[in-house]
Length: 122
Image (cartoon, rainbow, N blue to C red; front, side, top):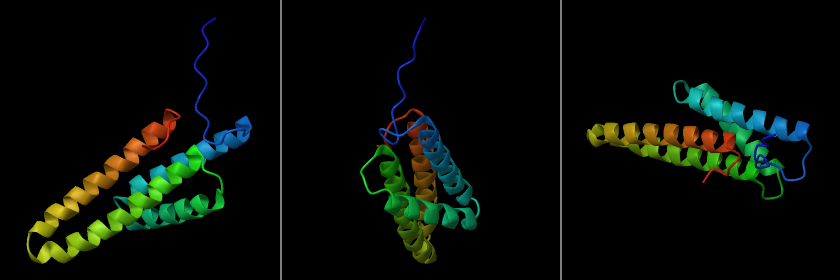
């Protein structure tokens, strides 16, 4: 009988139900971030969830690392979008906005895929 490798734990020592709930919550948060790239409201909701979950988890776990990754991506994206919007007066702003959008989508997809593989975000 072939055994699969044990899945990396988001929360070490957690029971299966808690680990599954953590994975579902992260999947929802990543999904809302991606949906938020099309409309702003899901991005704001996802950011609130990520901030709350990040501060709720007091020990450094893979789950907390993913929430930190989401929070960092959100805030760097906000800053890049503000700079890009200010620079639209001189056409380079549109390039900055496009690069920021692509970068954020790439980070959200990459983080979600790494979470599905049971790895940390980086």
